[in-house]
Image (cartoon, rainbow, N blue to C red; front, top):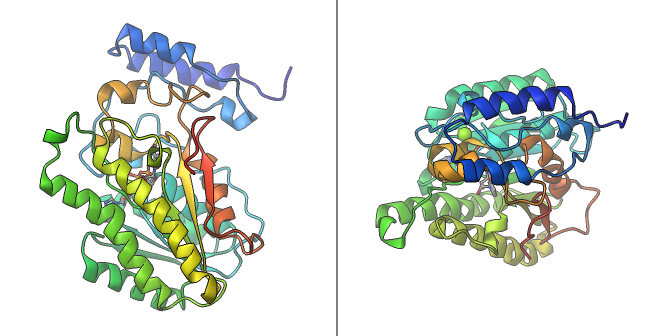
Length: 331
Ligand code: NAD
Ligand code: MG
């Protein structure tokens, strides 16, 4: 038998989902069933594949209410001291990709502050407990990043409570599917820009004022930066903006010894997708268009956030670290 056992857990997960997704269209279910890559690791063999059960949460959604629950590396991520003594602020650290980064950073020896919206307190509490379980300092700072004053205070408070700031991870984002440009109101457009572009700008400005040589800024971009979906017009352009911002700031901050890198995910199973980020049709087939035929789990990208901030990669700045299941990588 191969060291990758696809038999039992995959069957159990798959059977449950197939039943729950009975409402999915036969064409979608067929597409999903066809597009399944061979497992790349024993852990990946157990990761869920489409079709997924229909589900909808109000924005911003909770990981704890998703079916199946995402794997953020809670029981699997193993650290090796790569970020010992570092102090990190992670926006959107309550769930999804940001939570996976928070768990990984704590297990690599960092103290971690997370920001999230007040409605996400239940998810945030789980992350705070996981960071403390590693013996690391955990700071919870809820608040809305669309407010410049709050962004400034967030950086101040994180630096004060952590005793300094070595790593800023600009990861929070707003994504809402809209079929046509006529459906994107100015208020929608503004909320997406404020969350996804202004906030990283405000936070970076405040963080750079406190950072010293050796510090790192990590921005979350997306494959959407160069291959935008027709229904994610406002969101996709922000992922391109963040990628561009990463490259200009990397050059600007070389003189200060501060590095700036980006991580670009493909489709990942997170609350963003079940709280308005995807249509029900896309959600049920989520990940089926990636060559691996399934979405990534947040646990599968955490190590790239570690790499993006790892002091041993001291020549890497302005870089884009990708994880797309074989799909396009923004340049
Ligand atoms: P997620 O829902 O778990 O995380 C997004 C977080 O953004 C939320 O948890 C919330 O705390 C935060 N947020 C949103 N609006 C906010 C506001 N106004 N104030 C404060 N916080 C706010 O989803 P995720 O998929 O893990 O998203 C994390 C990052 O990954 C985003 O930058 C997203 O663009 C990127 N990304 C995700 C995917 C994917 O398929 N899930 C693909 C490519 C890129
Ligand atoms: Mg969340």
